[in-house]
Image (cartoon, rainbow, N blue to C red; front, side, top):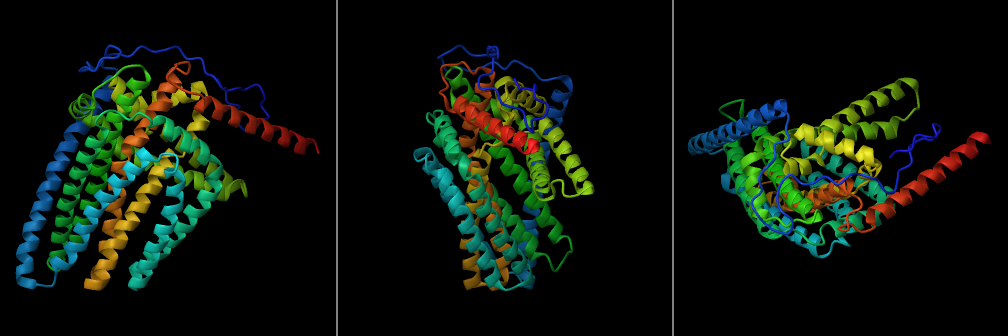
Length: 470
């Protein structure tokens, strides 16, 4: 447990081995793959919210499909009379970049599976370089919007580089935990990933057709920009849903593996779609928002610190809100969603409380798996943006900016979908370890890292005490 004996310490010392009673799983018999029977551990309010969001998600898909089909038909009819929109020059680079996103995403996840000891450092190197190249391309386009996007991309590349230098001491552990977690991936993982990517490609192409229809009618209505905004929102939510559905499925199977139980991945995926759609859709909305706000709070804390009283009070408020939000919604909760059939908020709260109770919270905060997946998505998005942007510069320059932005978003989401299984394996490893640290399925990766953090904190405390005495 966390050691609160020394009230002068800036942070609490982490215990190396946590004593947690082993919790028996609510279904399945060890060493046999079979169809599980979910035990319902969701409170009444969580069940109601899950049902409502499940209905809303399917209704949303229907509404988006109707909207996109309407825009495609209306845009095609309008373009016959106006001819101000050039569909061949607009669609071709986007469709090619969408296919490229699927190819790059699947290739990258194959590299992750086969060369897990190298991909973390590789992602931290490639993402800033590709982002920098994308920024140069946007600047070369020459419009006001492209110049603004190009400057943002260049600043982002610089920030990624600086962050990579700052986080380099954690590369060794990040590589180790990734390698250990994905050493034995669940059966049929590659097939499920490929099917998910194909679904993602088809859905993205469908939405691209809708965006093209909205562009074709921009001279007839002022709502075309609003329609494009709605389609981009639907792109984000649906791709997050696909990613998190994969996340829940693989994390459940991997959790069962760490608990000594074999489970069929197809059964787990069917259970996810049939029973957990509501929880996954809730998490697909909450997690990105909470991650963004928490990142903003941390950035404000690093920049502002305690330089003045007003800024310090704002930082404390932001960090307090971020701590409250992460307790109610975090990606680690998806493991309990799949394993115990809990609602997302309840699962997130239970999982985070467990991390705090066993002393893994700081280790979780320092984990690089999420950053690795994010940088992988940014790098893939930059590749797709370069493909579509250069194509548009050659064929029709006026389309280059918007086409490049759309291609970046598609590439980012496709890569996150492709490597969701790896992130799910890491999450399952942490959660399973927190529930039963003494299990023989775990090696010394986490205990050794906890000991390193313990020594580092003790050294910081010693130095702080010496400075205060001096």
